[in-house]
Image 1 (tube, rainbow, N blue to C red):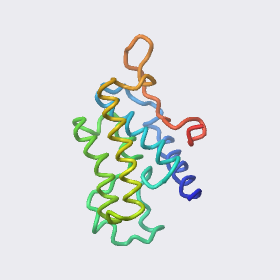
Image 2: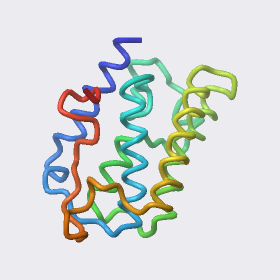
Image 3: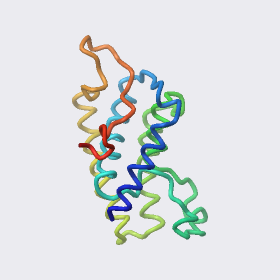
Image 4: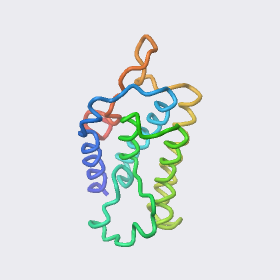
Length: 165
């Protein structure tokens, strides 16, 4: 389990090292709310499961039928990078739909009673709660400057040691 969590932290480091993330754009508020909820999930995943932060490694895990079962694979790290790029999603609904696809893919491939599906259920609850709170409160304070104007987004939601400490 520790190895899986360290792998999630390393995979998240790879996502953050992409050059497009270093120049994070300023996003409209509604996308900032989705980003904030995704970042909450990435933190929770890095601290616990480590299964949802990076694409499924079908070769390493010997999942030769994965693409036959899961037609549109996606992970939280990919959604995070796409949100930060600022030009991938045409609407907030499309971004939220893709986050929810992460959970449904996990359930589809692993079955409802599997450990991975139960982890997806927990992270889905984190996402839905975070997104609902963001909608009611507005974007997270770290996404805003003192003058209440949008500022470049922080591309590292976990913290300096990638485990939130």
